[in-house]
Length: 409
Image (tube, rainbow, N blue to C red; front, top):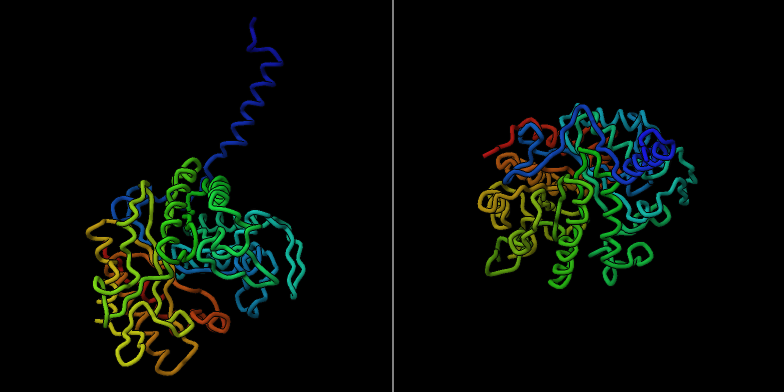
């Protein structure tokens, strides 16, 4: 029986092609950006050019599903609960003009699961013209069209009455406090399966599995069990780089350094070898996280002192294995948060500025990328790098740091 011209054959062929389109969506082609891959300790684009990611965090996707993009010159918070594509595009244009090549987006697990088109808190009741996922996709695509990479990162499980619910040690029970959002490790793997199936087709996306997972040794082992499970799942959808981090940040007490004493180092990179060729290893660096506690470089003899001078910063970064990780292990590193806490003012502000400047100098020297926390108002965020819409002292130092050519040896 000759089926080629038969109407039933044409219908079946059309259905088959449609099924391919539905289940295997095409890679989104963005004219101005190339997908990244890992070669040794570097990220490279498809032409083989080394790319050192240096940019900023935008925290607005924690606050509202639209990302909270304030228009230039508009009052603080005026963009919350509004979706204006021109404002988003204009902000991304400004990022590129400043020399950024990456933006990191914290966001909410529950929003990804439910994909809301409405949002309500004590201050606003909004129905958007698009769903949360669509607004996120649009923002990622517009970023790519402007030559910006995007880091998609889950920070909190829920948004409760206009505030993110806070960091969990791990997002699933017994560590996570919202089992209705993430009931198990397997469900968190499934959520990332969903993320990768949607966002993995954008060549400019990097996936960060969770912000600052932390805890005891049992928690650490649980975390890396998850990492080992989720990576093969992601690779069914995308080869885009994945960022893995353990602990809040790297820190060391220079009075009592390792190996004799405890510190938070990058030793976990070697302890948990990952069977994936496109992994970037992340950490954070702060002198003051905002609560006055121990910073990434500190001393305790005679009382706690968070350090800032260049020689101390150099010692600290060496003790926590940043140079060792890139030189001996040949692993790509990315500091996905670094900032200066200016709120206290006075001598503390000056020390924060010096720590920030010295740390950025070493990262540039070593060719390690970094993402500043945060390109937002210092009237809203303790580590904000803007004041009344213009770079403050920390913001100016950050912009100056981008003029330095990163070391690529």
